Length: 568
Image (cartoon, rainbow, N blue to C red; front, top):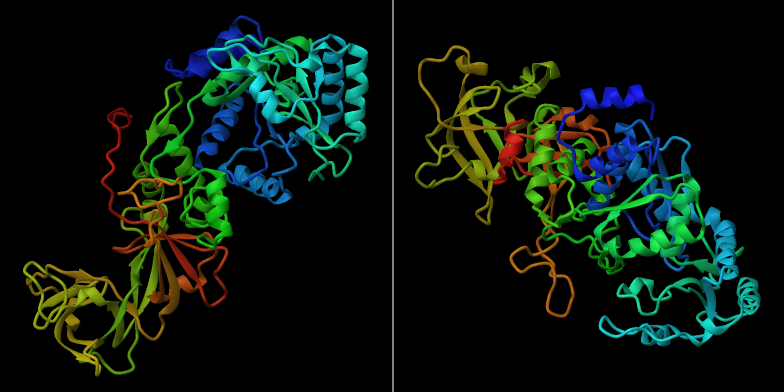
């Protein structure tokens, strides 16, 4: 980074910085690095979730802030779990979140040739050897936290024999699990990761990117620092579970003699209370048909949050609220809901939708007459303009907006009570009609034509306002109401380790009635439904003429913004 850029940065940026930024700025000031180069390196063995969003936005944000580079790289060194489907979904998620890698897309598998040569180099230096021990034997030989490990018999082999055996591993002469390559470090190290870790294994598997070109694959802890070094990464930002792996990371880049080794820095993961993020559990939910895919809106994969209707801006805001630190903490799901409410409330139109409809007939309204009422799209944001809504003799209202025998302080429709129809007239309820089973099928009322849109008031007041949609022009739609897939009162897991599922996590309403403007709603378009919450058009199941709306979040929240955020 040029000196003038550093000076400008120091003048314009706020004094308060997180600990990673402090490390980076110290490195730049001391000339350890002259630029900042970060990466996001997911394994393509599942969909990304909300926790990954923090890492994506952190790595990309650091590159942007310090005018550096950002790499999108797939750590695809384990063909047993990786799929092209996951590669594609991850790229879609990251683009949607707003991170742009331009032409800097990389795959660890493209470096397999260089990784093999790195392993050969370690063998020639006497720093790696071929082992015949099984996985169980390696675990036994490694020792315990209080007892040192034992020497692997294979460690006594000569360099020449190890080179020959490793070459034969590459040629496919050995069965899976029969031989591995181990780094020679220290079997007595207090750090278990340094007790001659396995760095290559035999796996006769077809790889999603390299096909059948290889039958040996590097282990993650060996491959990852090599990838970073090859790409010129300066700061390898990862989560806290890799802190104990850092000595091995540093050992690999040091022994392979990279001139400008990257620096690994760990930060605390983003944990969300009472949600499922484990790939093993999500995979089982998908396979058992409990959810309809990795993007089921009850999950917190990035694809699921997008399908439910969350915006990139709301997730970015949530990550900012959580902050960056070395201390693990658990965020509350209501904080995420707060962020999407704040993002949408001024941006999206407020529409009328009746989720449990019953017909309302205005007996004294002229037969065949239709009015077009001008309605503000958002009373708090005039820039969103207005729309027209048809009004006529027959409407739909919410079933629970009428009661024959209401409780005290019920201000909506009941016989003899006057209410305001939102954006329209005052109406007085006169009664209802029931079917043979006693269910209410029609509510009847009369209207006062002098009270249109609040004009011509006679001085009387009404305490209740209800929304409605025109019966003839209304759009029939399916609406899905989502709750947490986990029973929050019982916690995430049962005693046997299975998930404690909420049987009421999805409620589907098939005969909802929406105002006609929603007929033209596009996939992923978001709206506020008056009194109901924020909703999004489902991009997966909606069809022309048959829209499906997902409830993103209800309108009310008990979440309180932290005091330090209120001050900003």
